[in-house]
Image (cartoon, rainbow, N blue to C red; front, side, top):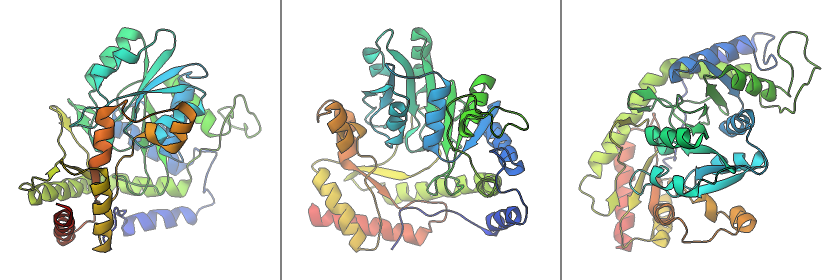
Length: 377
C-alpha cells in the first residue's frame, strides 16, 4: 500500500531525541532548553517576535482565541472548507462560528463574502485558513479587518514555508498558528505553535499552556488564570529542531513531487489540478485534485475505494464542516448554503503525498487513478 502520507525522519531526528533522553530535562514547565530554542527558530521562520510551543495545532488555535479575548456571545468568521479544528476552537471559548463560502478554484475563504456576514457588536474576529498550504488573500482579509476593527487569526497549520506577496505565512494577523502533525511539512509527532508580535498575547498563551501559572521562578503552585496542560515536551522540540534544519530540503522534495503529479496529469481532462493565486507561493502540504462533471460525490467515493484495492491510499479532503453530523445537530446546518464549499467538498481527492514519496510510486498512483476513473466513465 502506498500510504496517504509519511513522515520524513532520518538519523538526525532519532539522535536528537535520544540525546534529550540522556538528560534529566524531559519537560520544564513548557520552557526547557530544546523548547526555547525551537520557539526562537519558528519565530524567525515566520518573521515573528514571539512563538509559544504547544502540544497541537488545535491547542494553538484555542489559546490564540482565548488570548485575543474572544468569548461567549462573540462571532468569528471562518471557512467551512477546512479541518474541523478551525471551527471547534471557536466553540471552545464559547463563541459562535459564522461560516463563509470559499473561492472555488483556490479553496480559501472568499474575501468578497466576508463583509456580508459581519454583525456590528457581535463579530469579533476573522479566522482564515491557508488551505492545503495555499496562502489566503491576506491583503483583502486584513483590509476588511481594519475597516471593522476585527481581530485576525491565521490558521497556517498546513502552510509552513508558504509566502504571500513577499511575506511568510504564519506572519499575518494578530496571531497565527502552525501544526506539526506527522503529515505536515515538518513534524514533532504531535505539536503546534502560536506566533505573534504582541508580547501580551505571547505571555497569556505561555501561561495558559502551563496550567495558568505565573511566569518566573518558583511559580509551580501559583495559578493566576484558567489554564491547560498544552505543553510540548523536550523530545518533541528536539525532533522539531532537527526537522527545522532540514525544512528547506523537505519543501523542495514536496514541490518536486507536486510538479511530477501535475505533469503526469497535464492531459487528463477528467480532473482539475491545484492552482495558486498571483503573488502566492504554496507550501505543498497535500496534493488535492478535483474531479470534473459528470463525476459526483458518489463517483469520488467509489474511486477512493477502487484505488485502495489497487494498493493506493487516498482520501477525501475536506468534508465541509457545516455538514458534519455534530454541526448539523448543533446548528441545524443544511445542504445548499455554501455552494462552492459543497461542490469542492464533493469532488476533491487527496493523492498520496510526502517528501519521501518516490517517482515510481507516483506513476503507480496515477495509473490507479486513471484505471479507477475508466471503470466509472
